[in-house]
Image (tube, rainbow, N blue to C red; front, side, top):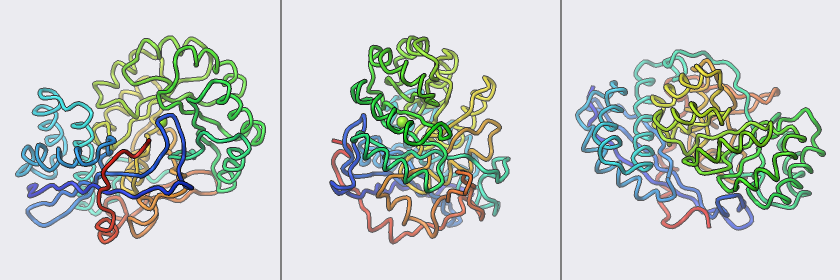
Length: 380
Ligand SMILES: [Mg+2]
């Protein structure tokens, strides 16, 4: 069965001001994703999701031209072979850096969807896993920079939904960050796990200032204090307190996770399946983390495809950490893109993979068609 065509479908929706959230990368004004449709010469179709990279049109173009030229005609079931060809001809030799990794991720997810549909198995089973419960935390674009009272109210609502772990957005000033985190800890008590994410917004001096409070408030991890490349800063920050560091959503392929793991400064590994090289590469990264006794806690992208795939992935590794539940107030790409939601939270705050062939979701093609690309930035 050969790959007959691949096509990128960039999609967007506007976020109205009253639903906008502020965090370390700006204020959300729209959401984007790049879906990837793979069709075989026998008419079989798989769908994947590539992260938008803050320029979805460019990612889509890369898929529709460069990737298409590389892989049309290849065996659609040879996902490792397709991965290797794109890696060798593009990532390893001609750059495009993150953009090529995002594009390859979407293609890889689509090929795994296709493979799983071919077997008639849910993806987790094809990957060698079982349908075990995966603990989830409340993440996505939520719990942002707001007054402590409003943040506490939002946090209470998420605990009422069943979440036993919440991720707050920091990376504001050290004083305001600590005030927000302290208010939520005091309101929710010690039984709820609290995580924080600086979205690369901290300096080393910021970390020195916030770390004593995060230690005292028993924060489960401090995510992305710095950009992915800043290995020295991660090493220094890890020595400033007991709160473990987390990173990985902006690390691409096992070749960037290698040094991250080797440094040992980061204790929670967070590859995004739509960014780091797809299921194929995330499985390799999970094995590398497993060898160091670390869990994988995949970062969640925009749509039901990434969310469902991430849960299948977590069910197929021996070191699953958290699934990042998307508690963004408004996300039709999560709620309306398929015949059912990508996941539901159970009474223990866990999620489970969807059964049925592939991802276990039936995509609504009319919905996809009704959300064409909106040009411009998604955060301002
Ligand atoms: Mg993050």
